[in-house]
Length: 97
Image 1 (cartoon, rainbow, N blue to C red):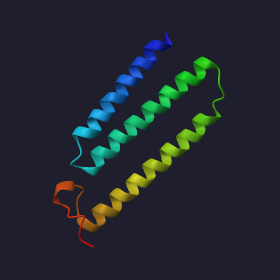
Image 2: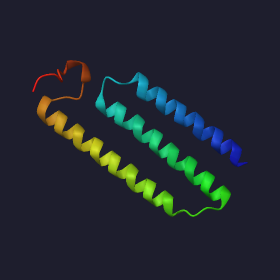
Image 3: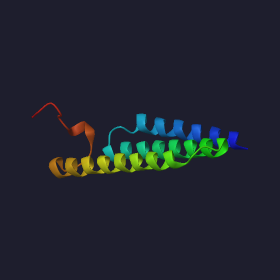
Image 4: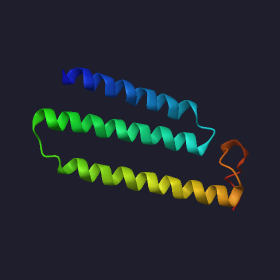
């Protein structure tokens, strides 16, 4: 039974990776696909940990890391929109100081 869940989460992980690689023109799309991959990995780890009977304390630590990654990405998005006015990557010149 849990083999199907692992296959489903691996499929979701591949779809998140595809979305990250194909929608790289906007920062918000990239952040959403990264969050999808993070939540999928969290679900995969929780399925494996519960099926093997391991301790779930590490899931809480991983969830805290996912939240920190999301907050960091949103703060970068806000500062980028504040300084440049939009999150479209192709209009930026990152070489200037």
